[in-house]
Length: 383
Picture 1 (cartoon, one colour):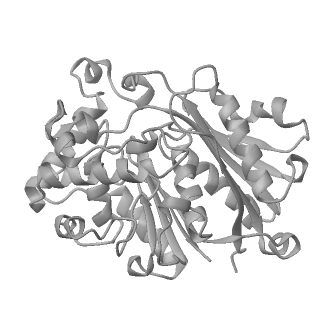
Picture 2 (cartoon, rainbow, N blue to C red):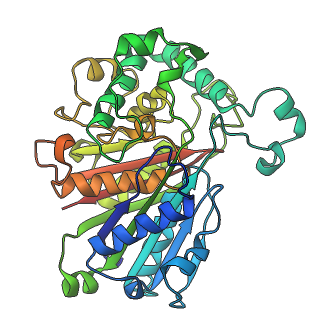
């Protein structure tokens, strides 16, 4: 039988521009908060896993945290870095290598778009020269095709982004804390058709950390544990339509790594999407949230427009999505985003989300992160 693992602590730094504060400092802030939330101190942590896309090596954080000699492993897995770190920390507990483990993700990106190098992704230089490394172009192409296939309107893209800013305005850790109307979003400058500038997240800054523990440790420590019912991590299969490989193979629908990861998580948890009370879905741009609603099993393709118009994904709706504002309001510090999602679900399930608390007393939650070049990690949590 698989060892039951629970989240016993979670912590965040603020997200958004923080002049003079390094990514490492944000990571230490998040770790300190998570360890304190668990009622522990750093020497209680037996295994740690962490990652950052561009702000340094997570294992070197021991210089600030304390030289306790624990194994501390670095991961780097695009937007799934945080989810991958958690996956490894959970497996350390499941295997019996530790009773208490920590996952951390952090980043501090400069202003402007990401600037990936083709060779780092196994692609020829000509791929970059042709402009195919521009991620906004990929997202525009993918959601444009999806909208045509499933009758999704541009107005729905704007509504999803407006929800993100509304929710972010209720989140003291968010970067974007001013509501923006759907009308303003729709009328803003076009970046890549059909996506305007307010429909995208921005490369950002922040840190997030989670402490996980075995059932024996939970019994000993008490506190406010949230059960991790499932965690999955998948890479793309043949036929996927991804960042840096935007092509439809043959005549069928592209495969989806998000659908694969979500299905694996639900199978492991022993529940279905209809039993989830609150969800965090990757929203690199507002079209991504729409697509991931169906790919993760919360509706069939094409139903999103009706759901969103009916308010189903709002904080007081049937399936609240991205209650903390998601990537659109928080920005995208690559290493931190997946663990930020988990922190938000833990906060919601504990009933501690303040102004953005889902009012129906959620008992189950789901997180989903997706990134280049076709990776996804999902969790199912419950109290």
